[in-house]
Length: 208
View 1 (tube, rainbow, N blue to C red):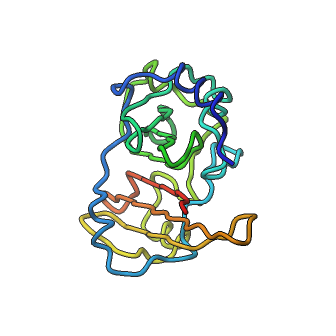
View 2 (cartoon, rainbow, N blue to C red):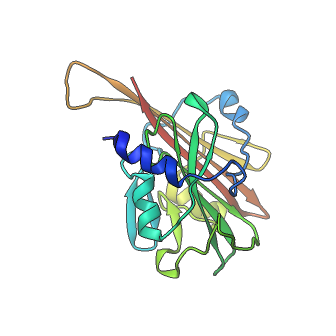
View 3 (cartoon, rainbow, N blue to C red):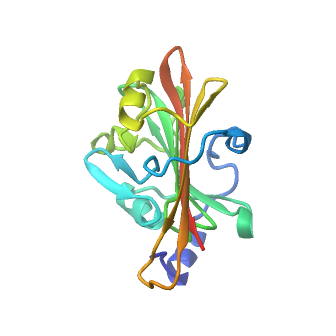
């Protein structure tokens, strides 16, 4: 269940500006060119911070801000283009940045996770993530993995383009009311350099 108006109001108070360590660009246009049908069994469902497991569309972003001690939530856009996020810097064993985000469809819950390998300096907008909350993974996939390791975790990708492995997902789901159906959409876009995973973009949303 998406959390309510009060929590969204708190989120707005804590939110920073568009310049607050903005999530990285991803070639979403590739998703429109995928020829293979969506894979019902491949969907971003959980992400892990160390030993803690969180679920897409069920974890309020504000709860993660409190749990990690993050004091600045980034924000950009309005209405359907609105996006809120938390940014973190990870130093070891391999440096990368992490973004946990909530789109307008997420209603305040995390529906997007991005990671990108980079030697970045920690800032107020993107502080160090506590060592106890690392490593970070999405459905068993994390920065630095080989292509063979990713294939073992997720299977073959739906498509491959310019160093990106693209996994797409679409499935009808039945909520508690048997008279309605919703559709869960998701994708994982994974970028490799020299055979190692350097960028992850995972999104899952459900709509009627």
